[in-house]
Amino acid sequence: MKPITCLLFAMLLAGMMSCEREDVLYRTADCGDNPVEIQSNCYEDRAMVRTYTNQPGMVIQMEPGRFAIVPEGDSIRLDDCNLPEPLKAEGMRIQFSGEQKEVYPNEKWAAYPFNFTCVSRQ
Image (cartoon, rainbow, N blue to C red; front, side, top):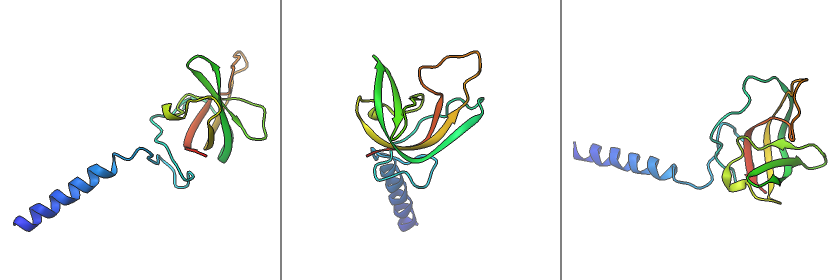
């Protein structure tokens, strides 16, 4: 009985340690070399208009506390709704995947609604 208890304790300890990593992959298989945990989904009620997969980009600061992502080779801005805090820094180079969401005809956005499914430092 004692060896089983030790084995269970060792498995529990190993599981707890694996959750303490700084870079944690969330909801996707291939996210680059330094994946960062994404906490939530954004804009689930909006239709998807474009997908990005392993897209390089740069984080820009639009105003204090407000960031956007500019995909490499494009001039549009994507909203930072669920961009992890460690990546919210002017000039941060990232690789990301996600869904650009629709903007309704009666709206004006500084950056397109976007839901990250994967993001990593470059």
